[in-house]
Image (cartoon, rainbow over all chains, first blue to last red; front, side):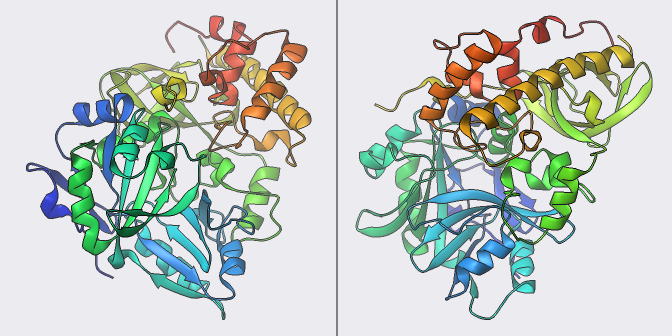
Length: 357
Length: 101
């Protein structure tokens, strides 16, 4: 399967820096991390989500199939709603984290960045009669708007009424005479919106949106996700790591009778976890994954993932520790640096105190 | 601070978080075990998906259970169970160790 590239790459600002995330080439930065982060947390940022594959489930058996492959309950997901769910392998490890868009005649699954090929292979491996699995990525472009004033951009760009939709609403709408699919959903804790637009109109919409919002690349988005403890699967789900160790149990509905990976998840919920994940900050050096965590020279865990937080002005990341030590407010040593474990969210989104007017 | 002292500090937070989870499940009649909620789990919107009516119920429940009034607090109090624990049991923040590991 071909790797994904942005259909609006030609309209990206000059100087954009690209990188490969799994099966996708994505813009890591359009300008600077600081400027893009500031747009997400203080104003409005425009995201090119072309690294996320759009997979349609259709046919009479689509809902039953989705119930089987998704870890959350989508039986009553209407065409006006979306939700986030994990997709698990039989052993309970994470295949992907997806946004499920309800549709009249099936569902759309939006993969995480670069994970679409793996997701598609997983879905096809579990395919059943009565369900069609179709990769629709090449027909569309997906853009995001995130920030405490993203609602204003939605109002100026598309329709003010869409800005105040309830969280996780989906609406079939129009932009400049073009049919679009609009959702209020995001990943940074700020006001978040997504627009699925036909590919032939994508560059026009991207260019128009650039007049209203600052483009933000993958690095700024992943930093903002980490700050509100939104999982970034490719950083957090290693081999043999279950959803509880990952701290993503909230993306699984264990009350659902059946789904791929359920037995392993139930066993994890009923068992004694060996490790749990907790956030930390401290120091200016960003430790590598696997860096030991120690107390008094004794190793108690390791670093999962870390970055430099623009908001906290220090290293920020996740540690995997024994359950009895996985708590906020502890001083531990990462490498040679003393750090403090944190209460989530690590940065409080401005949108939580910014009304839509 | 040695390992045993860190464990004691962590246990105090885990106890308060467990009390909060039990209160949330009981007061809001959620069909889940309290232990299934993680300390870092968002409570509103994504996460536990509580809504504004649930907030009102939780205000009353928190005051009854912990004797803490949060009515004038901003929504960040409900950012996670662990964040809520900081507010209903301020001793957790005060007793966090400050010495070297």
